Length: 78
Image (tube, rainbow, N blue to C red; front, side, top):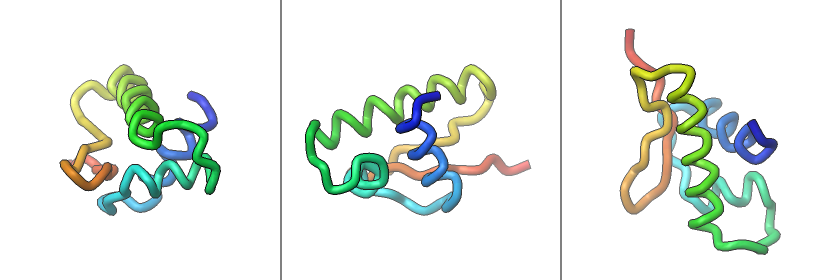
């Protein structure tokens, strides 16, 4: 897992259920530096994290998209 993937995963998992905008997640890993397209950068990192998590735990989607807002981490109910 890359540094950026890890930072976003920690941010989401530490505040499970909270919705983060793409801009908030981008600022978490890149700070105020706006070098790349925010939407695309965050989307690609989220896709990569999801792929890695699905390889480990196939029965649950941990990162959910909140349409028009951003992303949130969801803990499975037992």
